[in-house]
Image 1 (cartoon, rainbow, N blue to C red):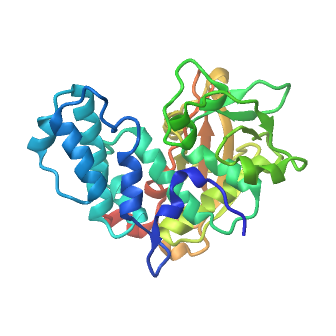
Image 2 (image 1 turned 60 degrees about the vertical axis):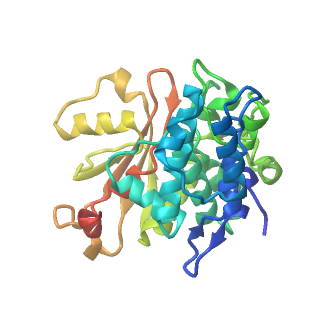
Length: 334
Protein backbone atom coordinates (compact mmCIF):
# COMPACT_ATOMS: atom_id res chain seq x y z
CA UNK A 1 0.00 0.00 0.00
CA UNK A 2 1.42 3.39 -1.00
CA UNK A 3 2.01 6.15 1.51
CA UNK A 4 1.28 9.85 1.17
CA UNK A 5 1.13 13.12 3.16
CA UNK A 6 4.00 12.10 5.44
CA UNK A 7 4.39 15.63 6.83
CA UNK A 8 0.96 15.69 8.49
CA UNK A 9 2.16 13.48 11.35
CA UNK A 10 -0.30 10.64 10.71
CA UNK A 11 2.33 8.05 11.58
CA UNK A 12 2.87 9.63 14.98
CA UNK A 13 -0.70 8.80 16.03
CA UNK A 14 -2.37 5.66 17.34
CA UNK A 15 -5.75 4.21 16.34
CA UNK A 16 -8.59 3.06 18.56
CA UNK A 17 -10.70 -0.04 17.89
CA UNK A 18 -12.99 1.92 15.57
CA UNK A 19 -10.14 3.33 13.49
CA UNK A 20 -10.18 6.81 14.98
CA UNK A 21 -6.93 8.70 15.57
CA UNK A 22 -5.67 8.81 19.16
CA UNK A 23 -3.24 11.52 20.19
CA UNK A 24 0.24 10.47 21.36
CA UNK A 25 3.06 12.21 23.17
CA UNK A 26 5.08 12.15 19.95
CA UNK A 27 2.33 14.00 18.08
CA UNK A 28 2.16 16.69 20.76
CA UNK A 29 5.93 17.07 20.83
CA UNK A 30 5.91 17.75 17.11
CA UNK A 31 4.10 21.01 17.90
CA UNK A 32 6.48 21.99 20.65
CA UNK A 33 9.51 21.75 18.34
CA UNK A 34 8.01 24.07 15.74
CA UNK A 35 10.04 27.26 15.17
CA UNK A 36 7.27 29.41 16.64
CA UNK A 37 7.61 27.66 20.01
CA UNK A 38 11.35 27.00 20.28
CA UNK A 39 12.62 29.76 22.60
CA UNK A 40 15.16 32.11 21.01
CA UNK A 41 18.43 32.89 22.73
CA UNK A 42 16.99 35.94 24.44
CA UNK A 43 13.83 34.18 25.72
CA UNK A 44 12.94 34.57 29.38
CA UNK A 45 13.52 31.82 31.93
CA UNK A 46 9.79 31.06 32.21
CA UNK A 47 9.47 30.35 28.48
CA UNK A 48 12.62 28.24 28.44
CA UNK A 49 11.47 26.16 31.40
CA UNK A 50 7.99 25.66 29.95
CA UNK A 51 9.39 24.49 26.64
CA UNK A 52 11.90 22.16 28.28
CA UNK A 53 9.35 20.56 30.60
CA UNK A 54 6.70 20.09 27.91
CA UNK A 55 9.21 18.27 25.72
CA UNK A 56 9.82 15.94 28.64
CA UNK A 57 6.12 15.62 29.51
CA UNK A 58 3.88 16.96 26.72
CA UNK A 59 0.73 16.35 28.79
CA UNK A 60 1.79 18.24 31.88
CA UNK A 61 -0.67 20.78 33.27
CA UNK A 62 0.12 24.39 32.47
CA UNK A 63 -1.51 27.12 34.53
CA UNK A 64 -2.70 30.29 32.83
CA UNK A 65 -0.48 32.26 35.19
CA UNK A 66 2.56 30.43 33.92
CA UNK A 67 1.87 31.45 30.33
CA UNK A 68 1.01 34.99 31.42
CA UNK A 69 4.49 35.25 32.99
CA UNK A 70 6.22 34.80 29.62
CA UNK A 71 7.92 38.07 28.78
CA UNK A 72 7.47 38.21 25.01
CA UNK A 73 3.92 39.00 23.85
CA UNK A 74 4.16 36.99 20.62
CA UNK A 75 5.49 33.98 22.49
CA UNK A 76 2.65 34.25 25.01
CA UNK A 77 0.10 34.24 22.22
CA UNK A 78 1.73 31.26 20.50
CA UNK A 79 1.70 29.27 23.72
CA UNK A 80 -1.91 30.21 24.47
CA UNK A 81 -3.01 28.90 21.08
CA UNK A 82 -1.03 25.68 21.14
CA UNK A 83 -2.13 24.86 24.68
CA UNK A 84 -5.78 25.53 23.78
CA UNK A 85 -5.35 23.15 20.86
CA UNK A 86 -3.71 20.55 23.11
CA UNK A 87 -6.61 20.87 25.56
CA UNK A 88 -9.07 20.11 22.75
CA UNK A 89 -7.10 17.05 21.61
CA UNK A 90 -6.70 15.65 25.12
CA UNK A 91 -10.33 16.26 26.08
CA UNK A 92 -11.77 14.06 23.32
CA UNK A 93 -11.15 10.33 22.70
CA UNK A 94 -10.03 10.82 19.09
CA UNK A 95 -8.93 13.60 16.75
CA UNK A 96 -12.12 13.01 14.79
CA UNK A 97 -14.19 13.62 17.92
CA UNK A 98 -12.15 16.73 18.67
CA UNK A 99 -12.81 18.13 15.21
CA UNK A 100 -16.53 17.40 15.41
CA UNK A 101 -16.69 19.04 18.84
CA UNK A 102 -14.96 22.09 17.42
CA UNK A 103 -17.31 22.26 14.43
CA UNK A 104 -20.44 21.78 16.49
CA UNK A 105 -19.40 24.34 19.10
CA UNK A 106 -20.37 27.08 16.66
CA UNK A 107 -17.22 28.99 17.56
CA UNK A 108 -13.81 28.11 16.14
CA UNK A 109 -11.36 30.22 18.12
CA UNK A 110 -8.20 28.52 16.90
CA UNK A 111 -6.04 29.93 14.09
CA UNK A 112 -6.66 28.34 10.67
CA UNK A 113 -3.21 26.74 10.85
CA UNK A 114 -4.35 24.39 13.64
CA UNK A 115 -7.75 23.64 12.14
CA UNK A 116 -6.26 22.91 8.72
CA UNK A 117 -3.73 20.55 10.22
CA UNK A 118 -6.47 18.70 12.06
CA UNK A 119 -8.38 18.33 8.79
CA UNK A 120 -5.18 17.23 7.04
CA UNK A 121 -4.41 14.38 9.39
CA UNK A 122 -8.05 13.24 9.71
CA UNK A 123 -8.34 13.17 5.92
CA UNK A 124 -5.16 11.12 5.79
CA UNK A 125 -6.92 8.59 7.99
CA UNK A 126 -10.14 8.71 5.97
CA UNK A 127 -8.23 8.15 2.73
CA UNK A 128 -6.06 5.31 3.98
CA UNK A 129 -5.97 2.71 1.22
CA UNK A 130 -7.04 5.15 -1.50
CA UNK A 131 -5.03 4.40 -4.64
CA UNK A 132 -6.35 7.26 -6.80
CA UNK A 133 -3.99 10.27 -6.95
CA UNK A 134 -6.80 12.40 -8.38
CA UNK A 135 -8.89 11.87 -5.24
CA UNK A 136 -5.91 12.62 -3.01
CA UNK A 137 -5.06 15.79 -4.92
CA UNK A 138 -8.68 16.93 -4.85
CA UNK A 139 -8.75 16.34 -1.09
CA UNK A 140 -5.97 18.92 -0.68
CA UNK A 141 -8.69 21.55 -1.18
CA UNK A 142 -10.01 20.65 2.27
CA UNK A 143 -7.00 22.00 4.12
CA UNK A 144 -4.90 24.10 1.72
CA UNK A 145 -6.12 27.30 0.02
CA UNK A 146 -6.02 27.12 -3.76
CA UNK A 147 -5.57 29.77 -6.43
CA UNK A 148 -6.88 29.76 -9.99
CA UNK A 149 -4.05 29.12 -12.46
CA UNK A 150 -4.77 30.85 -15.80
CA UNK A 151 -4.52 28.32 -18.62
CA UNK A 152 -6.52 28.73 -21.82
CA UNK A 153 -10.11 27.54 -21.20
CA UNK A 154 -9.31 25.08 -18.41
CA UNK A 155 -10.19 25.64 -14.75
CA UNK A 156 -6.94 24.81 -12.98
CA UNK A 157 -6.33 25.07 -9.25
CA UNK A 158 -2.83 25.43 -7.84
CA UNK A 159 -1.71 25.45 -4.23
CA UNK A 160 -1.65 29.05 -2.99
CA UNK A 161 1.52 28.64 -0.95
CA UNK A 162 3.35 27.07 -3.87
CA UNK A 163 2.31 29.34 -6.72
CA UNK A 164 2.23 32.45 -4.54
CA UNK A 165 -0.27 35.25 -4.32
CA UNK A 166 -0.93 38.65 -2.77
CA UNK A 167 -1.05 37.22 0.77
CA UNK A 168 -0.07 33.54 1.02
CA UNK A 169 -1.88 31.75 3.86
CA UNK A 170 0.37 30.03 6.44
CA UNK A 171 -0.02 26.26 6.57
CA UNK A 172 1.27 23.56 8.88
CA UNK A 173 3.48 21.40 6.73
CA UNK A 174 7.03 20.26 6.24
CA UNK A 175 7.30 22.79 3.42
CA UNK A 176 6.53 25.77 5.62
CA UNK A 177 8.93 24.52 8.30
CA UNK A 178 11.71 24.31 5.72
CA UNK A 179 10.84 27.69 4.27
CA UNK A 180 9.96 26.33 0.82
CA UNK A 181 7.53 28.69 -0.89
CA UNK A 182 8.01 28.23 -4.61
CA UNK A 183 8.02 25.29 -6.97
CA UNK A 184 7.31 24.45 -10.55
CA UNK A 185 3.70 23.34 -10.88
CA UNK A 186 2.56 20.57 -13.22
CA UNK A 187 -1.05 19.70 -13.98
CA UNK A 188 -2.07 16.31 -12.63
CA UNK A 189 -2.80 14.00 -15.55
CA UNK A 190 -2.91 10.32 -16.39
CA UNK A 191 0.66 10.65 -17.62
CA UNK A 192 2.15 11.95 -14.36
CA UNK A 193 -0.35 10.65 -11.80
CA UNK A 194 2.09 8.06 -10.52
CA UNK A 195 4.47 10.85 -9.49
CA UNK A 196 1.96 12.00 -6.86
CA UNK A 197 3.16 9.36 -4.42
CA UNK A 198 6.69 10.77 -4.20
CA UNK A 199 5.66 14.45 -4.30
CA UNK A 200 2.45 14.47 -2.21
CA UNK A 201 4.06 16.70 0.43
CA UNK A 202 5.31 19.19 -2.16
CA UNK A 203 1.80 20.28 -3.26
CA UNK A 204 3.18 21.13 -6.68
CA UNK A 205 0.54 19.48 -8.86
CA UNK A 206 -2.33 21.60 -10.15
CA UNK A 207 -5.82 20.09 -10.36
CA UNK A 208 -8.02 20.43 -13.43
CA UNK A 209 -11.51 21.18 -12.10
CA UNK A 210 -13.01 21.79 -15.53
CA UNK A 211 -16.45 20.23 -15.91
CA UNK A 212 -16.29 16.76 -17.42
CA UNK A 213 -12.71 16.08 -16.30
CA UNK A 214 -11.63 13.77 -13.50
CA UNK A 215 -11.21 16.67 -11.08
CA UNK A 216 -14.86 17.26 -10.07
CA UNK A 217 -15.53 13.52 -9.75
CA UNK A 218 -12.42 13.13 -7.60
CA UNK A 219 -13.53 15.96 -5.31
CA UNK A 220 -16.98 14.35 -5.05
CA UNK A 221 -15.32 11.08 -4.01
CA UNK A 222 -13.19 12.83 -1.39
CA UNK A 223 -16.22 14.61 0.06
CA UNK A 224 -18.21 11.37 0.29
CA UNK A 225 -15.31 9.66 2.11
CA UNK A 226 -15.00 12.62 4.50
CA UNK A 227 -18.68 12.49 5.42
CA UNK A 228 -18.66 8.73 5.90
CA UNK A 229 -15.52 8.80 8.03
CA UNK A 230 -16.77 11.48 10.41
CA UNK A 231 -20.52 10.90 10.43
CA UNK A 232 -20.78 7.25 9.43
CA UNK A 233 -23.31 8.12 6.72
CA UNK A 234 -23.26 6.86 3.15
CA UNK A 235 -23.90 9.59 0.60
CA UNK A 236 -23.78 9.77 -3.17
CA UNK A 237 -22.24 12.92 -4.65
CA UNK A 238 -22.39 13.68 -8.37
CA UNK A 239 -20.72 16.61 -10.13
CA UNK A 240 -23.02 18.80 -12.23
CA UNK A 241 -22.15 21.03 -15.15
CA UNK A 242 -25.11 23.33 -14.47
CA UNK A 243 -28.17 23.64 -12.25
CA UNK A 244 -31.13 23.66 -14.61
CA UNK A 245 -34.62 23.76 -13.12
CA UNK A 246 -33.28 22.35 -9.90
CA UNK A 247 -35.36 22.85 -6.78
CA UNK A 248 -33.08 24.43 -4.20
CA UNK A 249 -34.65 22.68 -1.23
CA UNK A 250 -31.31 22.46 0.57
CA UNK A 251 -27.82 23.60 -0.29
CA UNK A 252 -24.40 23.67 1.33
CA UNK A 253 -21.83 26.31 0.47
CA UNK A 254 -18.42 24.67 0.47
CA UNK A 255 -16.80 28.04 1.22
CA UNK A 256 -17.84 31.47 2.45
CA UNK A 257 -18.36 32.87 -1.07
CA UNK A 258 -20.56 29.96 -2.12
CA UNK A 259 -22.61 30.25 1.07
CA UNK A 260 -23.34 33.91 0.33
CA UNK A 261 -24.36 33.02 -3.21
CA UNK A 262 -26.60 30.21 -2.00
CA UNK A 263 -28.23 32.54 0.51
CA UNK A 264 -29.06 35.01 -2.24
CA UNK A 265 -30.54 32.31 -4.46
CA UNK A 266 -32.50 30.95 -1.51
CA UNK A 267 -34.12 34.35 -1.05
CA UNK A 268 -35.11 34.51 -4.70
CA UNK A 269 -32.39 36.83 -5.90
CA UNK A 270 -30.67 36.47 -9.26
CA UNK A 271 -26.90 36.42 -9.39
CA UNK A 272 -25.31 38.90 -11.75
CA UNK A 273 -22.92 37.54 -14.36
CA UNK A 274 -19.79 38.58 -12.48
CA UNK A 275 -20.91 36.86 -9.29
CA UNK A 276 -22.18 33.74 -11.05
CA UNK A 277 -18.87 33.42 -12.91
CA UNK A 278 -17.15 32.79 -9.58
CA UNK A 279 -18.97 29.47 -9.14
CA UNK A 280 -16.35 26.79 -9.80
CA UNK A 281 -18.28 23.57 -9.27
CA UNK A 282 -21.75 22.24 -8.46
CA UNK A 283 -22.60 18.87 -6.96
CA UNK A 284 -25.78 16.95 -6.17
CA UNK A 285 -25.73 14.97 -2.93
CA UNK A 286 -28.27 12.32 -2.05
CA UNK A 287 -28.58 10.23 1.09
CA UNK A 288 -29.83 6.72 0.29
CA UNK A 289 -31.13 6.21 3.83
CA UNK A 290 -33.89 8.81 3.72
CA UNK A 291 -34.78 8.04 7.32
CA UNK A 292 -31.73 10.09 8.32
CA UNK A 293 -32.95 13.18 6.48
CA UNK A 294 -35.12 15.87 8.05
CA UNK A 295 -38.72 15.85 6.83
CA UNK A 296 -38.45 19.23 5.12
CA UNK A 297 -35.97 17.76 2.63
CA UNK A 298 -37.14 14.18 2.29
CA UNK A 299 -36.01 12.73 -1.03
CA UNK A 300 -35.02 16.05 -2.56
CA UNK A 301 -31.36 16.34 -3.57
CA UNK A 302 -28.94 18.51 -1.64
CA UNK A 303 -26.79 20.82 -3.73
CA UNK A 304 -23.17 21.64 -2.95
CA UNK A 305 -21.61 24.85 -4.29
CA UNK A 306 -17.90 25.65 -4.59
CA UNK A 307 -16.81 29.19 -5.49
CA UNK A 308 -13.80 31.44 -5.59
CA UNK A 309 -13.27 34.93 -4.21
CA UNK A 310 -13.00 38.00 -6.41
CA UNK A 311 -9.21 37.62 -6.30
CA UNK A 312 -9.45 34.01 -7.56
CA UNK A 313 -8.77 32.27 -4.27
CA UNK A 314 -10.54 29.11 -3.09
CA UNK A 315 -10.82 28.49 0.65
CA UNK A 316 -12.91 25.40 1.15
CA UNK A 317 -14.64 24.89 4.53
CA UNK A 318 -14.97 21.12 4.99
CA UNK A 319 -16.81 21.64 8.28
CA UNK A 320 -19.81 22.80 6.23
CA UNK A 321 -20.19 19.26 4.89
CA UNK A 322 -20.67 18.06 8.45
CA UNK A 323 -22.68 20.84 10.04
CA UNK A 324 -24.68 21.84 6.98
CA UNK A 325 -26.35 18.58 5.98
CA UNK A 326 -30.06 18.10 6.84
CA UNK A 327 -29.45 15.05 8.99
CA UNK A 328 -31.69 14.32 11.96
CA UNK A 329 -29.04 13.45 14.51
CA UNK A 330 -27.15 16.66 13.81
CA UNK A 331 -30.13 18.66 15.01
CA UNK A 332 -29.44 17.64 18.60
CA UNK A 333 -25.67 17.43 18.41
CA UNK A 334 -23.78 19.09 21.28
